[in-house]
Length: 258
Ligand code: IPE
Ligand code: IPE
Ligand code: MG
Image 1 (cartoon, rainbow, N blue to C red):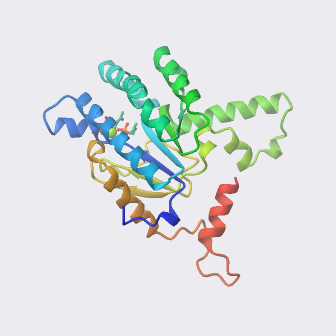
Image 2 (tube, rainbow, N blue to C red):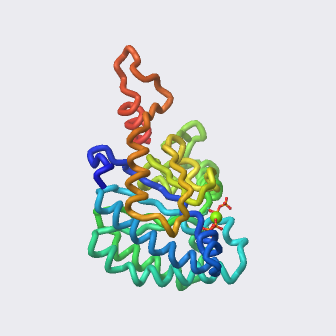
């Protein structure tokens, strides 16, 4: 924790939690054993983020494309989600964590939707940290849904096409409720975005680690934040420009104002 300067925390950390299957296979266990251990890593990461004072943590738990996996793995993941929504309830309540979910949630089984709704509404006034689960989520799908909404508004003459700007579109993206991503972490060794937060990651700092998700813990998060704090964010501006504009501050304000 000493690695981290708590006065310069990323305001929104997003994580592609990858490598559960390989973690299990490396031990001769079924992939689902990796997902179960992955839930422990979620708990450790959520606690560490909350303790540091990070306002928003978004976790990629299940993508739109993951629906094409074997039904047994999908069922195991849904069951695990439902169990965690019960077992972690006290943790969220005790630590003032607000639960939110993004994605095409209507594709989840009814009982999973009901548990998500119930814990989200129970925690909706919590101010400690917003934990967003991306479930049945795809960045392209989110943009398609927003585009459909905008097209309907244009058709109904509620908005002029010339008034569609970044702010108008961002308002229709549920992932942007907690603002743009500052730090995007991917475990499991792959260096790709796999249809995660396409819009909100436009100026995110990326941190890739070979560590498999079930091995990720509080220290792993501190290392990622330490790396983030060593980066210079420019937002398209020029460092040390004559007009004195600091790219870090000016760009960040610009980004967050949208
Ligand atoms: C990430 O781990 C969890 C989900 C995608 C649900 P994987 O299941 O993708 O694990 P690997 O990448 O096959 O090791
Ligand atoms: C991304 O991991 C999705 C989640 C972590 C939920 P995947 O394992 O599905 O991504 P690819 O297939 O390696 O791109
Ligand atoms: Mg994977």
